Length: 365
Image 1: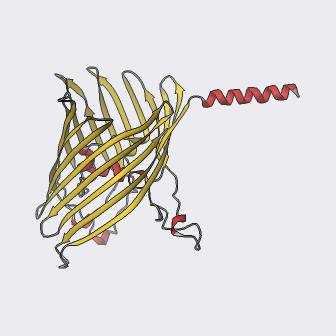
Image 2: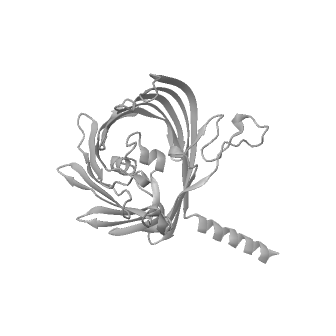
Image 3: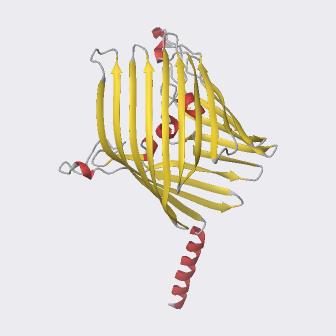
C-alpha cells in the first residue's frame, strides 16, 4: 500500500512538473454597441436608406504556450472563428453555427458558440534567428489590409476577417542588430484540375501563396519599418504586389505619433474568375498618449482603389479611450469607449456612412 501511495505521489509530482512549463492566459469581452448606417445605393432608385440598432457583442479567447526547453515552443489559441473572434450578439446565432438553437423549443438566447483552433504553431526562438510554422499570427498593419482585402481595405479587415493569423511559415534573422521577418502564407491550397478539351478553357492550378518581408530599424530616434508583400499565383490568377512603410516618431508633448502608408497594384485581367487589374493606396496617421488615468488613441485611414472604369474612395476614423479599472499580478479589467466612422464613395454605385459607438469591457488573466 505504501509503495502504491508513493507511486501515485511521484506520478502526480511528475505530471505537475511537466505541466508547469505550460502558460495559460486569455481574455473575455462584452461590447454594447450603438450602430447607425446611412447609404445611398444608386442603382436601385430607392434613395438613401438608414438603419439604427443597439446590440451586444461578446467573445472569449484562451492562449496556451508550452516551453519544451532551449527556446523550442508550441503555442495555440482557442476561440470562436468569427470576425475578430467575436461569438456574435446576445440572443442571436453565433458565427459558424448555422443559426441552430439547442433544441427546436429553445429561446433565441440559448444560442451557443463553437470553439476553434484559431492559432496552432510551433517553432524556435533564438537570439539571432528563429522560425514558426502552422497557423501563425501576423500582427495587423495597413499593408495587410489593402493587399489581401483590396475590395474593403478599411475597418481593419486583416484583424477582423482574418483574426491576424494565417496558415504558413515565418522566419526571422537578426540583420545589423534588428529583426528581418520573412513570411510565406498559404492563401489557397487547391487541387489542380483541367477543363474538358472541348471547353476551350486553359488548365488552372489555384494554389496561391504570398511572400512578406518587414524590417525595423531606428534612425535618429525614429522607428522605420519597410514592408513588402507579393502574392505568387498561376497565370490568370490575381497576384497583387504591395509596398509601404510604418514610421514612428519620438514623443511630442506626451503623444506618440506615427504614420503608415502603402501602395498596391494588380495587373491580371480574367473575366472568367472575375479578376480585374487595379492600383491603390492607403494612408494612416495615428496619435496616442496618456490622458488622466487612461490612454487615448486616434487614427484615420484614407484609401483609394482605381479600376479601369471606376474609382473607390474610403475613409475610416477610430478613436478610443482605455481606462484600466483594476490591475493586479493576476490580470486586469478595463473599459474602452470607442467611436468608429466608416465612409465609402463609389460613383454611380453607392455612398455609404456607418457610425458606431461602443464600450468594450474586457477582463484579462
